[in-house]
Image (cartoon, rainbow, N blue to C red; front, side, top):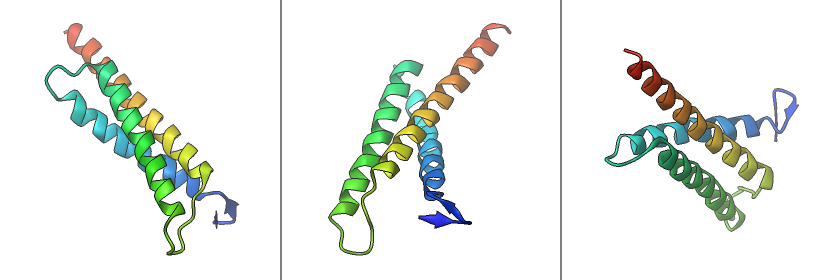
Length: 101
């Protein structure tokens, strides 16, 4: 897809949406009892990447103008990894800051 004259610009949207969604999911997980930062990272990243893959495969079987794109799945997975990683770094930074007080 071309937007603003830039080919594959929709991948930026895929990346951004999955990064934000996975970051929020990470924060929700991390707030749960017994959830470590590492565990929250892996669960949120895997759920984000798998959700993106499942939705892309679902588009393959739809007959309403949607199309399956492997590049969209990659953008979704990279966005999920960046979102989960960002959440992990924020929590790690807050923990380090709290221990210095």
